[in-house]
Amino acid sequence: MKKFSKGVTALALTGSLLLTPMSAYAANDDITGHMFEPQMRILIERGIMSGEGNGIYSPDRAVTRAEFATLVAKSLQLPQADSQFTDVPKTHMLYDGVSRAAGAKILSGRGNDIFAPEDKITREEMAIMISNALAYKNINIPLQPLTFVDKDAITYKEHVQVVTSAGIVKGDDKNNFLPKVTATRGTASAFLSGMLQVIDNNGAKPKPPEVEKLYVVTHVDANGKEQEKGRYSTYEEAVAAAQAGGVKAVKHKDEYVWIQDGYAVAKKTAGNAINLYRNDLKTVTNYISYGTELKVVSIEGNAVKVQLSNTEGYVKKDEITLFPAEVMKLSSYYVNAQDGYLYHRYYNHYASKPDYTGYRYGKAPSFLKPGQFVYSVDGKTFGEQSFYQYFNYISLRTKTEYTGEDLDNYLKQVRPNSPLIGLGKTFKEVESKYNVNALFLFSLAMHESQYGESTLAREKNNLFGLNATDANPHEDAKKYDSKEACIEDAAKVYMNEGYLNPKHWRYNAAYTGNKAFGLNVKYASDPYWGQKIAGHMLRVDTALGGKEYNSYKLAKVLTQTDVKKNPNGTKLYTVRPDAVVTVVGEETIGGQTWLQVISDDPAATIGYILKGNVEYVAH
Image 1 (cartoon, rainbow, N blue to C red):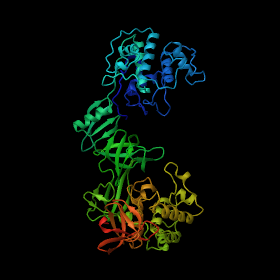
Image 2 (image 1 turned 135 degrees about the vertical axis):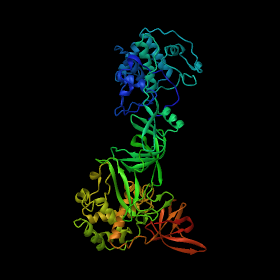
Image 3 (image 1 turned 90 degrees about the vertical axis):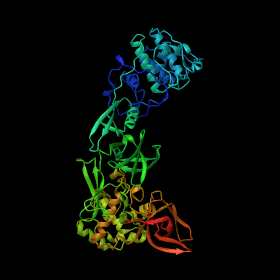
Image 4 (image 1 turned 180 degrees about the horizontal axis):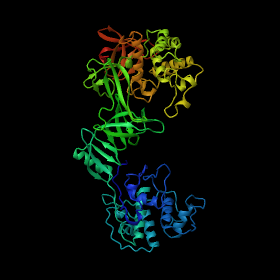
């Protein structure tokens, strides 16, 4: 919904011109809610003004002299004529409209047969044409004196007197006419629609339109039950009333358009994903799949500030559906199941039958009771306590203890017909060559290729969804000569040189993570992708004897700091606050304690970070 700006106002219209009530327009366009929507609808209804397609009418775009002359000619259905303007030849796109208006003596040039068709028209120039149009239709308007603060800046006072005395135009909220201000398509519509009603009513002043009050201030109780608290004609009025009255929501045509507190769900778009932006709604910082739930932080015009994992960003309001917290209570939650594992359950809004779905994430923290449900924005913070799932945060530069034969044996147990059986050796080979954890690559292949049985795996030997875009996954995905070649490419190019390398644009920390840190930031639009891969890794580890779980300690970075090649050496890379590092050991040198951590940079296996800049976390 566009915000109304303070500025020049024009009287809107009712009566014979308003052929269709505004409520009949279920318009998905750029004039719905605009301050000049009623006037533009009138011209559109009469066939005087047209758009650019796809609901684009550009109400705030400047209007040229030729465009306005053409709108006048269409409004009055002026007869055909010829003009002598040298800068409006017959080949000019708007020659016909300019010629008709010139023939009716509604417009004049700027001397020497020059019309200046491409110049932006001013409010005063529009007033001249409207005044001449009324004279052409023999409409006599009793003149009233001009009272505008800036009347001395008006060159053609008599013409401005005509349009203001007729009630077609008013000044701004400070009583300025602003004669030299460039007109927009919206203000041009206000001038023309006012002119038409004066003509239709033989000189009577136009009346304001009856604007339906479609914005409903809605109280939502603790059970999600709604109660109407008032209706308003504009979004701004409704939101102001809701805030003043302590009401938590505003609806428009049965859809929430403002909430005080709650959630947003990404809509299904053409590309099957929506972007997260900075507050300019232009700079993309992340992307998420449709159906993703987001915590609403604030609503700022067309931008909605949201939280996902540990990161905040902005989404476009028309790309999400808003839900008050009372309506969407505990939609996404974590539960400590009876088997000792933590499960994540979330609502699939776009399934053929919308319902809850979920996955096993990892070990349940001891502070969650069996059967206990809890909300977490990031999968590790549960109320006042936190618990980091080991496989979601362990460095993928570590090496697994499991052999290729172990990995194959796991598949023989859980999916005996999987085409991935026999590839365990390849996973271990690339782990050794490129320093990428084989258990991770194996789990990733199971997840992305449906255990080697997906269409991409069968037809393109693509086990990891490499280059499979949300918009066109099958066509865009890379094709490989063999599954072994795909594993090699994934480990070497995508992981070692890309996602796990601090020097690469895809890097956001060398663990699966979420939409704040880790591979999940750029690898997948699914915000829970990293957690799902972690779940696969834990299942494999558990089935093979639990050799990997908690074999390293994890620590959270407290302040931006460098990871060094050695305590007194050069910087390898920098880590951000809240990132997680995998700790190998501690070393005290010169009175300072350093943590030995798994290095993300392929130039070193171990890096060093000051212990005072991190803290160990529960996992």
